[in-house]
Image 1 (cartoon, rainbow, N blue to C red):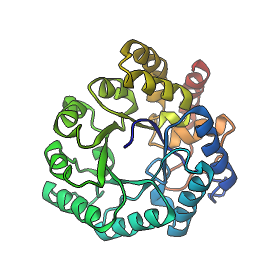
Image 2 (cartoon, one colour):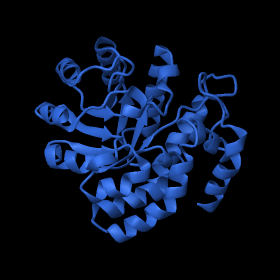
Image 3 (cartoon, one colour):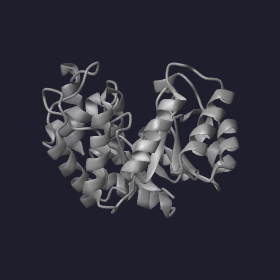
Amino acid sequence: MFSGSFVALVTPMNADGSLAIPALRDLVAWHIEQGTQGIIAAGTTGESAALTFSEYQQVIREVLLETKSRIPVIAGTGTNSTEKTIELTRTAKELGADACLILTPYCVKPTQQGLLLHYQKIADSVAIPQILYNAPGRTAVDLLPETVKQLVAYPNIVGIKECVSENNRCEILVKLAGKQMDILTGDDCTSYEAMRVGGQGVISVTANIAPKLMREFCDAMLIGDFAKGQKHDQQLQVLHRVMFLESNPIPVKWALQQMGLIPSGIRLPLTPLSVQYHTALNEALHGL
């Protein structure tokens, strides 16, 4: 169902921390113009953990209004509770989201059996396309390929965002489940290798900054033009790296503010980009 360049969209905020809705609308319009193929709204890059329930609804609603069904809108609905995740997933469906991106439960560190039952219950409870989201660096739990394989029988589990790049993880997933679900990488730095071995696309932080180039990279990789894809990837590597000089989305929000696309707001416990990283990030932006 899903392939190509998907942006893990930031949530624009004013300096006082309030939602900057006009900037959100403009940002979505810019992404459509630049060729982004799908938007993840209110995901981890969108500071979902810092949004109230009503703000979460507002963000999803505004993104849907601006896209006008031109590209898919995928709502982030993962929490550390199965019941809360079901509630958010139902809300996203009611609002009209095309799919949900469901992060593994953070902090609680469930077993593989717990992860299996968690995702099975969500799939049974809400009839909306669902994308698994594995990011051990954020959650302290790793959704292993063997567990993913047991979930492919669910027709509404349609993909996985895999952020583990070590030990050929994407290649293993492609072999185990690539015919039943879309394998999307969530690690910009290794996106070339992930797509070269059969990954269907990227859910990208860098796409916030360089959506057109990320689209061109994905287009090349999907038609097997690896030389062109590698050329684009080499152009993007510096930007990929500086997007994680501090915790995401600190650098990407600062970069977008420097580009004049969003106001300066970010919510605690996140803070604005530290001064010592300003030069490196500015150089990466100007170089690109």
